[in-house]
Image 1: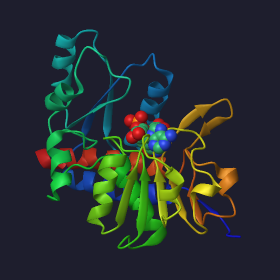
Image 2: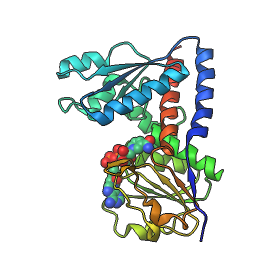
Image 3: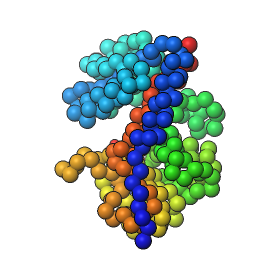
Length: 273
Ligand code: NAD
Protein backbone atom coordinates (compact mmCIF):
# COMPACT_ATOMS: atom_id res chain seq x y z
CA UNK A 1 0.00 0.00 0.00
CA UNK A 2 1.43 3.38 -1.04
CA UNK A 3 0.62 6.62 0.74
CA UNK A 4 -0.90 8.97 -1.86
CA UNK A 5 -0.01 12.67 -1.81
CA UNK A 6 -2.40 15.18 -3.41
CA UNK A 7 -0.37 17.90 -5.17
CA UNK A 8 -1.66 21.46 -5.44
CA UNK A 9 0.04 23.98 -7.72
CA UNK A 10 -0.35 27.14 -5.62
CA UNK A 11 3.26 27.36 -4.30
CA UNK A 12 4.79 26.77 -7.73
CA UNK A 13 2.37 29.26 -9.34
CA UNK A 14 3.21 31.87 -6.70
CA UNK A 15 6.96 31.53 -7.40
CA UNK A 16 6.32 31.92 -11.13
CA UNK A 17 4.19 35.01 -10.44
CA UNK A 18 6.92 36.60 -8.31
CA UNK A 19 9.29 36.22 -11.25
CA UNK A 20 6.67 37.68 -13.61
CA UNK A 21 6.32 40.75 -11.37
CA UNK A 22 10.10 41.30 -11.48
CA UNK A 23 10.05 41.06 -15.29
CA UNK A 24 7.22 43.61 -15.48
CA UNK A 25 9.18 45.97 -13.19
CA UNK A 26 12.18 45.65 -15.50
CA UNK A 27 9.93 46.23 -18.54
CA UNK A 28 8.78 49.54 -17.04
CA UNK A 29 5.24 49.41 -18.42
CA UNK A 30 2.04 47.41 -18.02
CA UNK A 31 1.69 44.57 -20.57
CA UNK A 32 -1.74 44.45 -22.23
CA UNK A 33 -3.60 41.32 -23.33
CA UNK A 34 -6.91 41.37 -25.22
CA UNK A 35 -8.99 38.41 -24.02
CA UNK A 36 -11.81 37.43 -26.39
CA UNK A 37 -14.78 35.42 -25.19
CA UNK A 38 -18.45 34.65 -25.63
CA UNK A 39 -19.71 35.79 -22.24
CA UNK A 40 -23.02 33.92 -22.70
CA UNK A 41 -20.98 30.78 -22.00
CA UNK A 42 -20.87 30.46 -18.20
CA UNK A 43 -17.63 28.40 -18.16
CA UNK A 44 -15.75 30.82 -20.43
CA UNK A 45 -17.05 33.79 -18.46
CA UNK A 46 -15.97 32.36 -15.08
CA UNK A 47 -12.54 31.39 -16.50
CA UNK A 48 -12.05 34.88 -17.98
CA UNK A 49 -12.87 36.50 -14.61
CA UNK A 50 -10.32 34.29 -12.85
CA UNK A 51 -7.68 35.03 -15.50
CA UNK A 52 -8.31 38.77 -15.28
CA UNK A 53 -7.96 38.63 -11.48
CA UNK A 54 -4.64 36.74 -11.70
CA UNK A 55 -3.39 39.13 -14.39
CA UNK A 56 -4.25 42.17 -12.26
CA UNK A 57 -2.42 40.66 -9.27
CA UNK A 58 0.89 40.74 -11.19
CA UNK A 59 0.28 44.05 -13.02
CA UNK A 60 -1.00 42.86 -16.42
CA UNK A 61 -3.86 44.75 -18.08
CA UNK A 62 -6.28 42.02 -19.24
CA UNK A 63 -8.95 43.64 -21.42
CA UNK A 64 -12.04 41.48 -21.87
CA UNK A 65 -13.63 41.70 -25.30
CA UNK A 66 -16.80 40.10 -26.62
CA UNK A 67 -16.41 38.24 -29.96
CA UNK A 68 -17.91 40.36 -32.76
CA UNK A 69 -20.97 38.99 -34.59
CA UNK A 70 -19.40 38.94 -38.07
CA UNK A 71 -16.13 37.70 -39.56
CA UNK A 72 -15.20 41.15 -40.89
CA UNK A 73 -15.64 42.83 -37.52
CA UNK A 74 -13.82 40.00 -35.69
CA UNK A 75 -10.85 40.30 -38.10
CA UNK A 76 -10.66 43.99 -37.23
CA UNK A 77 -10.96 43.28 -33.46
CA UNK A 78 -8.17 40.70 -33.48
CA UNK A 79 -5.78 43.23 -35.02
CA UNK A 80 -6.42 45.89 -32.37
CA UNK A 81 -3.38 47.13 -30.46
CA UNK A 82 -2.22 44.77 -27.68
CA UNK A 83 0.98 42.97 -26.65
CA UNK A 84 -0.86 39.64 -26.59
CA UNK A 85 -4.20 38.20 -27.68
CA UNK A 86 -6.10 35.29 -26.16
CA UNK A 87 -9.21 33.63 -27.59
CA UNK A 88 -11.37 31.47 -25.33
CA UNK A 89 -13.58 28.58 -26.46
CA UNK A 90 -16.28 28.50 -27.68
CA UNK A 91 -15.16 30.59 -30.65
CA UNK A 92 -17.51 31.86 -33.38
CA UNK A 93 -17.84 29.25 -36.13
CA UNK A 94 -17.83 31.83 -38.95
CA UNK A 95 -14.04 32.16 -38.78
CA UNK A 96 -11.39 29.49 -39.28
CA UNK A 97 -8.96 28.81 -36.37
CA UNK A 98 -5.96 29.05 -38.71
CA UNK A 99 -7.06 32.51 -39.81
CA UNK A 100 -7.46 33.55 -36.17
CA UNK A 101 -3.91 32.36 -35.42
CA UNK A 102 -2.57 34.26 -38.47
CA UNK A 103 -4.36 37.47 -37.46
CA UNK A 104 -3.00 37.24 -33.91
CA UNK A 105 0.51 36.46 -35.18
CA UNK A 106 3.31 34.40 -33.60
CA UNK A 107 4.56 37.32 -31.48
CA UNK A 108 1.21 37.94 -29.77
CA UNK A 109 0.32 34.23 -29.37
CA UNK A 110 -0.02 33.33 -25.65
CA UNK A 111 -0.71 29.60 -25.98
CA UNK A 112 1.71 28.18 -28.53
CA UNK A 113 -1.04 27.77 -31.14
CA UNK A 114 0.53 29.78 -33.96
CA UNK A 115 2.14 27.42 -36.53
CA UNK A 116 5.50 29.19 -36.13
CA UNK A 117 5.56 28.54 -32.37
CA UNK A 118 4.22 24.99 -32.73
CA UNK A 119 6.70 24.35 -35.56
CA UNK A 120 9.70 25.59 -33.58
CA UNK A 121 8.74 23.25 -30.72
CA UNK A 122 8.39 20.33 -33.15
CA UNK A 123 11.82 21.02 -34.68
CA UNK A 124 13.56 21.62 -31.34
CA UNK A 125 14.31 25.29 -32.13
CA UNK A 126 14.63 27.44 -29.01
CA UNK A 127 12.57 30.57 -28.46
CA UNK A 128 9.04 29.33 -29.15
CA UNK A 129 6.01 30.57 -27.19
CA UNK A 130 4.91 27.44 -25.30
CA UNK A 131 1.42 25.97 -25.00
CA UNK A 132 0.66 26.99 -21.41
CA UNK A 133 -0.96 23.80 -20.09
CA UNK A 134 1.75 21.60 -21.59
CA UNK A 135 4.48 23.76 -20.06
CA UNK A 136 2.61 23.70 -16.73
CA UNK A 137 2.65 19.88 -16.79
CA UNK A 138 6.42 19.83 -17.38
CA UNK A 139 6.96 22.28 -14.50
CA UNK A 140 4.70 20.28 -12.16
CA UNK A 141 6.48 17.05 -13.06
CA UNK A 142 9.89 18.66 -12.46
CA UNK A 143 8.65 20.01 -9.13
CA UNK A 144 7.54 16.54 -8.01
CA UNK A 145 10.32 14.40 -9.54
CA UNK A 146 13.32 16.62 -10.33
CA UNK A 147 14.96 15.40 -13.54
CA UNK A 148 12.63 13.85 -16.12
CA UNK A 149 15.51 12.14 -17.97
CA UNK A 150 14.73 8.53 -18.78
CA UNK A 151 11.31 8.49 -17.10
CA UNK A 152 8.59 6.47 -18.83
CA UNK A 153 5.75 8.94 -19.36
CA UNK A 154 2.37 8.13 -20.89
CA UNK A 155 0.39 11.12 -22.14
CA UNK A 156 -3.31 10.33 -22.57
CA UNK A 157 -4.90 12.80 -25.01
CA UNK A 158 -3.31 14.18 -28.17
CA UNK A 159 -4.94 17.57 -28.69
CA UNK A 160 -2.96 20.48 -30.21
CA UNK A 161 -3.45 22.44 -26.98
CA UNK A 162 -2.21 19.86 -24.47
CA UNK A 163 -1.14 16.34 -25.48
CA UNK A 164 0.87 17.01 -28.65
CA UNK A 165 2.97 19.94 -27.42
CA UNK A 166 3.42 18.16 -24.08
CA UNK A 167 4.84 15.04 -25.75
CA UNK A 168 7.40 17.19 -27.61
CA UNK A 169 8.37 19.12 -24.47
CA UNK A 170 8.87 15.84 -22.59
CA UNK A 171 11.14 14.61 -25.39
CA UNK A 172 13.20 17.79 -24.92
CA UNK A 173 13.61 16.70 -21.28
CA UNK A 174 14.78 13.24 -22.45
CA UNK A 175 11.77 11.37 -21.09
CA UNK A 176 10.55 8.27 -22.95
CA UNK A 177 7.11 9.25 -24.18
CA UNK A 178 4.07 7.28 -25.30
CA UNK A 179 1.00 9.17 -26.54
CA UNK A 180 -2.42 7.51 -26.23
CA UNK A 181 -5.76 8.77 -27.54
CA UNK A 182 -9.37 7.79 -28.11
CA UNK A 183 -8.44 5.10 -30.67
CA UNK A 184 -5.73 3.50 -28.52
CA UNK A 185 -6.42 -0.20 -28.03
CA UNK A 186 -6.05 -1.45 -24.43
CA UNK A 187 -5.10 1.86 -22.79
CA UNK A 188 -4.23 0.14 -19.51
CA UNK A 189 -1.50 -1.97 -21.16
CA UNK A 190 0.33 1.31 -21.94
CA UNK A 191 -0.41 3.25 -18.75
CA UNK A 192 0.57 0.34 -16.47
CA UNK A 193 4.16 0.61 -17.80
CA UNK A 194 4.44 4.31 -16.89
CA UNK A 195 6.34 6.03 -14.10
CA UNK A 196 4.19 9.08 -14.83
CA UNK A 197 0.74 9.31 -16.45
CA UNK A 198 -0.52 12.68 -17.64
CA UNK A 199 -4.17 12.50 -18.60
CA UNK A 200 -5.84 15.27 -20.63
CA UNK A 201 -9.01 13.84 -22.16
CA UNK A 202 -11.96 15.39 -20.34
CA UNK A 203 -13.35 11.86 -19.70
CA UNK A 204 -14.28 11.77 -16.02
CA UNK A 205 -12.73 8.91 -14.05
CA UNK A 206 -10.99 7.37 -17.09
CA UNK A 207 -7.84 6.34 -15.17
CA UNK A 208 -8.45 3.86 -12.35
CA UNK A 209 -6.30 1.64 -10.12
CA UNK A 210 -6.03 -1.09 -12.77
CA UNK A 211 -4.49 1.47 -15.20
CA UNK A 212 -1.48 2.25 -12.99
CA UNK A 213 1.54 0.65 -11.42
CA UNK A 214 2.20 0.90 -7.67
CA UNK A 215 3.88 4.24 -6.87
CA UNK A 216 3.05 5.97 -10.16
CA UNK A 217 2.83 9.77 -10.37
CA UNK A 218 -0.44 10.96 -11.92
CA UNK A 219 -1.05 14.41 -13.41
CA UNK A 220 -4.72 15.12 -13.97
CA UNK A 221 -5.29 17.84 -16.58
CA UNK A 222 -8.95 17.01 -17.25
CA UNK A 223 -11.63 19.28 -15.85
CA UNK A 224 -15.19 18.00 -16.11
CA UNK A 225 -18.25 19.75 -14.66
CA UNK A 226 -20.53 17.16 -13.00
CA UNK A 227 -23.41 17.23 -10.50
CA UNK A 228 -20.79 16.52 -7.81
CA UNK A 229 -18.72 19.54 -8.89
CA UNK A 230 -15.48 19.62 -10.89
CA UNK A 231 -13.78 16.26 -11.39
CA UNK A 232 -10.82 15.11 -13.47
CA UNK A 233 -9.78 12.20 -15.70
CA UNK A 234 -8.44 10.29 -12.71
CA UNK A 235 -10.73 8.32 -10.41
CA UNK A 236 -9.24 9.52 -7.15
CA UNK A 237 -11.04 7.03 -4.89
CA UNK A 238 -9.77 4.16 -7.04
CA UNK A 239 -6.08 5.20 -7.21
CA UNK A 240 -5.76 6.27 -3.54
CA UNK A 241 -3.33 3.90 -1.82
CA UNK A 242 -1.66 2.86 -5.11
CA UNK A 243 -0.44 6.12 -6.74
CA UNK A 244 2.42 8.03 -5.07
CA UNK A 245 1.16 11.46 -6.18
CA UNK A 246 -2.05 12.70 -7.83
CA UNK A 247 -2.57 16.33 -8.81
CA UNK A 248 -5.67 18.06 -7.44
CA UNK A 249 -8.54 19.05 -9.77
CA UNK A 250 -8.83 21.95 -10.43
CA UNK A 251 -6.02 23.25 -8.15
CA UNK A 252 -3.12 21.08 -9.33
CA UNK A 253 -2.05 21.87 -12.89
CA UNK A 254 -4.67 24.69 -13.17
CA UNK A 255 -2.96 27.50 -11.18
CA UNK A 256 0.37 26.70 -12.87
CA UNK A 257 -1.28 26.91 -16.32
CA UNK A 258 -2.58 30.38 -15.44
CA UNK A 259 0.91 31.47 -14.36
CA UNK A 260 2.35 30.11 -17.64
CA UNK A 261 -0.20 32.13 -19.63
CA UNK A 262 0.83 35.25 -17.70
CA UNK A 263 4.50 34.44 -18.42
CA UNK A 264 3.68 34.27 -22.11
CA UNK A 265 1.95 37.66 -22.02
CA UNK A 266 5.03 39.21 -20.40
CA UNK A 267 7.28 37.51 -22.97
CA UNK A 268 5.14 39.01 -25.75
CA UNK A 269 5.47 42.48 -24.21
CA UNK A 270 9.24 42.05 -23.71
CA UNK A 271 9.65 41.01 -27.36
CA UNK A 272 8.13 44.34 -28.49
CA UNK A 273 10.26 46.54 -26.20
P1 NAD B 1 -9.81 17.72 -26.72
O1 NAD B 1 -11.23 17.27 -26.73
O2 NAD B 1 -9.32 18.66 -27.75
O3 NAD B 1 -8.86 16.43 -26.77
C1 NAD B 1 -9.14 15.28 -26.00
C2 NAD B 1 -8.12 14.21 -26.30
O4 NAD B 1 -8.44 13.09 -25.47
C3 NAD B 1 -8.15 13.70 -27.74
O5 NAD B 1 -6.82 13.55 -28.21
C4 NAD B 1 -8.85 12.33 -27.66
O6 NAD B 1 -8.36 11.41 -28.61
C5 NAD B 1 -8.49 11.90 -26.24
N1 NAD B 1 -9.50 11.00 -25.67
C6 NAD B 1 -10.83 11.20 -25.60
N2 NAD B 1 -11.44 10.15 -25.02
C7 NAD B 1 -10.47 9.26 -24.72
C8 NAD B 1 -10.46 7.97 -24.15
N3 NAD B 1 -11.58 7.37 -23.74
N4 NAD B 1 -9.27 7.33 -24.00
C9 NAD B 1 -8.12 7.91 -24.39
N5 NAD B 1 -8.06 9.15 -24.97
C10 NAD B 1 -9.23 9.81 -25.13
O7 NAD B 1 -9.58 18.33 -25.25
P2 NAD B 1 -8.45 19.35 -24.67
O8 NAD B 1 -8.76 20.73 -25.09
O9 NAD B 1 -7.09 18.80 -24.90
O10 NAD B 1 -8.79 19.27 -23.10
C11 NAD B 1 -8.76 18.02 -22.41
C12 NAD B 1 -9.20 18.24 -20.97
O11 NAD B 1 -8.25 19.09 -20.32
C13 NAD B 1 -10.55 18.94 -20.81
O12 NAD B 1 -11.22 18.39 -19.69
C14 NAD B 1 -10.17 20.39 -20.54
O13 NAD B 1 -11.18 21.07 -19.79
C15 NAD B 1 -8.92 20.21 -19.73
N6 NAD B 1 -7.96 21.33 -19.75
C16 NAD B 1 -7.38 21.65 -18.55
C17 NAD B 1 -6.41 22.64 -18.48
C18 NAD B 1 -5.74 22.92 -17.16
O14 NAD B 1 -4.98 23.87 -17.04
N7 NAD B 1 -5.92 22.07 -16.14
C19 NAD B 1 -6.07 23.37 -19.64
C20 NAD B 1 -6.64 22.99 -20.87
C21 NAD B 1 -7.58 21.96 -20.90
